[in-house]
Length: 494
Ligand SMILES: C[S@@+](CC[C@H](N)C(=O)[O-])C[C@H]1O[C@@H](n2cnc3c(N)ncnc32)[C@H](O)[C@@H]1O
Image 1 (cartoon, rainbow, N blue to C red):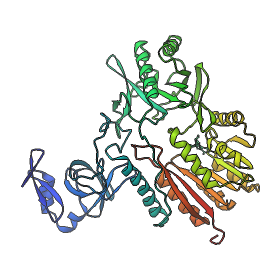
Image 2 (spheres, rainbow, N blue to C red):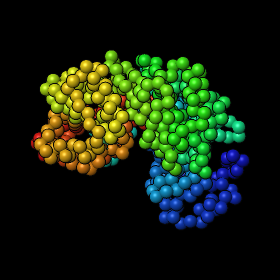
Image 3 (tube, rainbow, N blue to C red):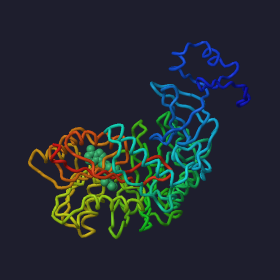
Image 4 (cartoon, helix red, strand yellow):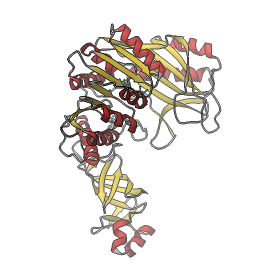
């Protein structure tokens, strides 16, 4: 007999289950017949689990009696003791109790709030192994959705220093007692975890947010209460141009104005001399979405500037921009390599944001056409083309899944199409249009291995073949994976 957290336990070698004395589930389980035991794995049971691989959310995954078991903070290669806390269809979630056989890649997470904060998932794993696991995630996703096992997936392109890389953070606020608190929500909850000096955010982003929080508290700006849907200020957002040092602060409010707005702007400017822009974004809805549709500049410029490899980019508050500028250069270089342009091609930059990828390629292309649904981003893209002396690029406001099929039906035939969609992936209409148009080179930039692999499976069925897949680590310490997947039109197959 062993002891676990003050309870005597028996290990049943046949089932691999630890049975607690006095535990109803344990007693009932002893009475079950063999078939029942092979399928039931109830809440509270403690199991011994060899961890086989990493899940998309960074959890360790093992298999127990044909069920997939997810255990947060367990590392592939380890054997752990875990307690089941949730049973789903064909899977269970279990909490890590003890690591019986630790991985050589396990390390002490440097962040003091790592266990509570939902921001990072891999700080307990050394960085080289994080990169290997991310590559494996892509491999598994492609194997599951396309059935292809030996795809040419390159080693993940990592960072020399995988800390303090994030150029932007958006944090919710809460008034608790007399204090204004700010932080991340802990996993699967709205419990606010104060983060202090976040180890993956740029120090200037941390400083801007903390100073702004202090000023908001000092001026007693009313904070939004999500339960009652009252108060004003919901989130603070800070973004920095790493090369220019310019900082933008966005105040996201339920109400169209903030009380003491003038004093607030004055104090923020006094406390934060690197601010180049203060914007109020209004989100009056009862929603967990952070951003509202309308923005108003309270002070300074409407956009900050960033420089990537000698190109300058304007970034308005609502426009998307990659969160890790150091890796963005490597990501776009990878896209340029994949495109292998000769100067004559027509290139489509679908989901273009502020035009970054298209402008990276424009000097080597005949013509670049980009589109995005956010009007501010398209305005930035046009301005960015002008500022960089690029006159063969045009940008449109529109949905890629509507724009491209319409143009294809009018006879438009691009040579290279780059798609860089949100996590949800490409729409069916866009995939159909890409199959109809038979693009010689289709470059899919993705931040979600599952949708990338699912969409690729449909493109493969339609006549494309996969050239190369390169993971680029845009988000060290987290389980997120970015990849550049090159697809080529396979004339023979079609
Ligand atoms: C992952 S970002 C990529 C942006 C850009 N390629 C870059 O590297 O910065 C996705 C972009 O798609 C835009 N977007 C979302 N849905 C869209 C759609 N249906 N059609 C076109 N653009 C869309 C978003 O506004 C965002 O700018």
